[in-house]
Image (cartoon, rainbow, N blue to C red):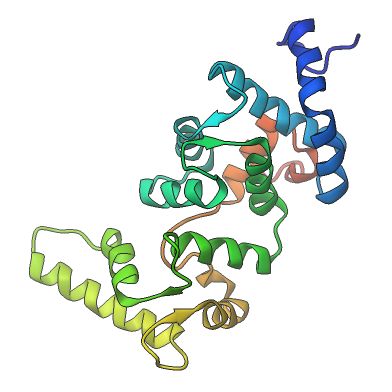
Length: 220
């Protein structure tokens, strides 16, 4: 048998094919990834699971991926993403793993907006209120002068609601957020970085053999 991954022995390769053959076909048919790219992504997941001695990837492994590969360092955001894609917040299924990469690498603006808003509103809420926004923007302003920092945070909160709360009802609904972001895509991650930037995406694409996401030669 030709090994799919030369770093795995025959038994591990056979086990991978047995466990993931159905998922490979499903994701190759339902996503923009090619079959080879789906295999490459699931091989990486499989290795994480093997290292974890489980069929699942642990959220601590996911945290390391975000910190090292995706360049996302806000642990609150990472925790919310983890809760958003997992069932229990403790383990990551292969389906959750693929969903993450689909949004990060192939997601349309609409899909990315939906994902981002769900991350920002994690905890069962369907809108953003001032308390949630206030907590999120605390990271943006730090310093020794507490009064100045609190004033800057309050000003930022007012600015955000002035921008996004278009119907002035005191909360930001997804429809309001989406309308603003469609006109100004740079505001997609207005409460903190969620998606890897182009350089980190390219690095992950090379490491995970996602050929369709390789940057043009000479770009980096």
